[in-house]
Structure formats: structure tokens, C-alpha cells
Image 1 (cartoon, rainbow over the protein chains, first blue to last red):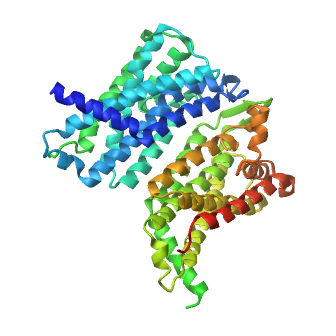
Image 2 (cartoon, rainbow over the protein chains, first blue to last red):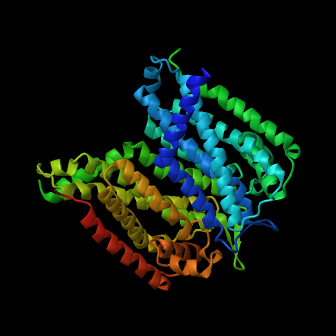
Image 3 (cartoon, rainbow over the protein chains, first blue to last red):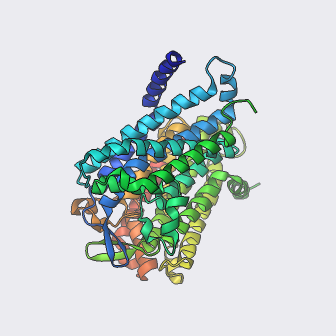
Length: 253
Length: 253
């Protein structure tokens, strides 16, 4: 099993690094953050409070710019597999569709973690604030959790949409909403009424990004974010449960 | 059948095709709708820069209304014309009584009308949701500006389709061209927050002056005559791009 899976990992990693879409995703994510570093004098104003723009967006963008592109790639790929019956055909070979998808998913999670680290490092180089503590190591499992949740949700989208074109449109709209409501681009605290209290629970990634921001900007320990991590784990479990129901990974049913 | 009557029939058929396309509904309804909902919920948020402040909803409804809708329309149009090119559709059309020019005009007319209608609706809904958009004669004043925006976008689509060999490459080039425009045209972030050199360079980027013009007219009720330099840059870009489009995209063999 392992001996068959390792070459698959190597092949998957090579294919991913040869993909123009992946290379473009890494380059654009890095350039976006580098560009934000040029913004000298911009703050968000909420009531009487002001928040520095670049410091606020850097942690969220470092994680989500790459992850959302991985999600978009997965939506396109999953919808294409479905439309062309790739997994059905794969099921007739010794390689099981579940192992194929599993290896590919873990490869993308690895890419998400590495690319997020790269984007965060570039952000710091161009003037963003990052608290350089050992707590930053906690970003590895947190980013992996965000990436895995996103990939599972991508399969849900690919499974519930009728064709690749609609899947891509739904996926892009979903990613766009995440940018707005998950605390990536805008402070959740600026939402009206009770929404700031509700959003961390009902919007995927919002709680984990709150934890990531605390660790990056304040050097906080992970133990201060037990509730956020728990919400992230619940979202991951929900996404992993729904994905195989929405998307036919095998031809068993 | 006269040439004009034939072209109008083609335009009518293109309009029906457009209205059936999920891509078009995504770019004219789903994305703008999601964006407006987001801006409405974040209507307390404002940008503070260079001793000024502006409500996020005012800034983005005008900036992204102009740029996002124009680029979205161009993107959907590009998918069509690059597929025509890859499939040799225009070469084959040139053997029929319909000319390639008629086919193109028949496609451009509904796209241009749809693009402008979407932007007008976007501004009107933005106003209803609380953006400080003037809905009187100001809206009529910006129609010629939106014509320039729309034709600039469609010309860029022709150029990209002309210089690329496949719809996939066309899509990748379009993405690469579009994303810097969101950053440096002042559509999303105030140019006054950037270093002076970048702010100066940005004045000569396509769309920058046009976005500033629309903002000045619909947010501050300023007359179009206040924006002579901005409009001149926009007209020069549109002219150059239309000429380049004619040279790069082979309308006939």
C-alpha cells in the first residue's frame, strides 16, 4: 500500500509543480502581498477606531490567497473528472479513486502550507508586521486545516453543480464571499448587530483566521484560541462528511 | 435581406444566447449581487488615508462597478471569440452570406448594451443599499464614460484572443492582465494611499481616469468638464486598443 502510494505522491507533486495554474497562483499571491506593502497610508475606520490596513490583511491574505486558488483549481478539476467520468474509469484499474483523490488532496494541502509561509515571509520583507515567535509553528496545522476544509468544500461544489462551467462560477462566488466574510479582507467587527458574534460560527475559516491573525500579529499561544480551533475542527469534519455524499468519489452507489 | 437587417437578426440571436449563458448570469448577477450584499453589510466600514476618509460602500460601488463589471463582461466575451478563433469559425463563416464583420458586430452590440445596463443597475442598487450615489442627471452624464469603458474592455478581449492560440491560454492571459488593474486603477484602494511615483504612473493606466471620472460625477455631482485630462487618457487608450484589436484579431482569413 505505502510503496504504491509514495510514487503516487511524487508524481502528484511533480504534476502540481508543472501546472501553470499552480505557478500562477503562487506568483499572484506573492505579488498581491508585495503590492499591499506599497500602500503607505491606509487604515480601516470603524466608528472611532482605526486599524492599519496592511497589518490587518497580511495574515488573512497569506493563508487565504493561496488556499482559495487551490479551492478553485480543485473545483475545476473535480467538475472535469465528474463530467468526463475519469473516476469511474479509474475504478477499473488497480489504483482506487479514493487513494488517487486522497494523495492529490494531501499534495495540495502541503502546497498551501508552503505557499502561505512564502507569502507571509514576503509580506514581512515588504514591511508587514509579524511577531517572530515559536508560536508561528502553529500556523502549519492551522493552515493545513483551512486548506483541507477548502478542498472538501470544493468537492461539495463540484458534486452539486451540473457542469464544469457552473461549478467554476459557483466556486468563484463562494471564494469571493469568504474573502469578505471570513475576516480575510475586512474586520468582522465592522458587521452590524449580532453578526460579529455569529460569523465565526457560521462562516467556514472565520474562526481559524482569527486565531492565525492573533498568532501572527501578537505572538499569542494557540491555547488562547481553543474555541476557534474547535470551530475549525467542526467545520472540517462537516466538510469531510458532506464531500463524499455530494461528490461520487467511487462508483459504489 | 439588407446587411443591417441581417446584422440586427444576428444581434437578436446573440442576445438570446447571452441570456441563456450561465457565465453571463454569473458575471452580471451573481458576482455583482454578492458584492453589493457584502458592501451593504460592511457599510459602517471606511477607508482612511492622507487625512481623508471615504465609506467603503461608496468607494467600491463606483470603482468595482466600473472595473469589475467591465472586466467581467470582457472576460465572458473573450471566451466566445477565442473559441471562434480556435475552431476556425470566422474562416468558415466567411464562406457564407454572413460576413465575419456582421457576426462580430452582432455579438458586440448585445455585450455592450448588457455591460452598460449592468453598471447602471449596479449603481442604482448600490444607491438603494446606502451608497451615496446621485441618481439624477449624473447617471446620464456617465453614459459616454461607460461607453469608453465597455469598448476598451471588448478591445482588450479581441487583442488577447488574437495573440493567444487557445481559449485556455486566452483565459490565463486575461487573468494576468486583469488582476493588476484591480490594484492600480484606484478601483479598490485609494491611489492617494500609495507612494507618489505609483500614484503618478497610475494616472496613465487604462480605466484609472475613467473610474475617477465616474466617482467624481456620481459621488460629488461634479461636471464631466472637470475631468478633461482623465477622459483624454481614456479616449486615447480606447482608440489605441481598438486599432490594435483590428490588427491582432483576424476577422477574416
